Image (tube, rainbow, N blue to C red):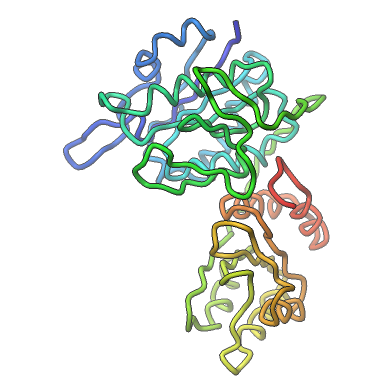
Length: 330
């Protein structure tokens, strides 16, 4: 029987009505008691490092989870993290980059309704998450939700209320859960050797969402405070010129200051293609602008935080950004 560590972090799955709205209040052991049949599946121990709405989870919490997993890696066959849905995709992406060569499963799950409600999706998601984590073919970071097994670098929350809250963006689901067992669509061999854990992130990364008529001076302002800027452009990717080339001038100043700029698209699927249109090709004239292609925004942001914390040169930033990790970029 597999031995699995459950790491509870809060979220809707652990929430009760506080009188001022839902707030996490259910302990890890109480959550586990909601699914007593898991005793037949695996041996489970629990930890609760924090109990927060996932809106309040960010880089320090991701690094805390890495430390917990590293400290307990040799003692368990896998890890299940219960998490709020709002930032689960960011945490899944962060763990994918902060724990490389992971040959054990790290599974994130949660729910759209509290585990204490009669019509909750919590019990099924918990059962599926532990069932997948206990499977011999499982390894690496995945989100298990509403019967889907999604790569940690490909998960995105696409619905705010429905039980099928998460989608796998621009890549197939790895498996679906059927009667508590994974039905695999894609199988990869587990990596060989020891995992590598990283313990640093550069949080000075900003996402700028373009809107029609936005002023180019915003780039100069952001360059004063951030080391990396992800620009969510329109369509296949590009910058407006509004007849004065101000955006291209500001972009060149940013790059001349040594800032890292990544162009992505606001469109959820099929990614960016900067070389398709003139408004995209002209960006290349400004300097070395990176392109997210088909990466999710969550993966783009967290990967950049990881890279900027350890790369020693512009060339190394580029090499690391375009190096595929858990099928994040093509």
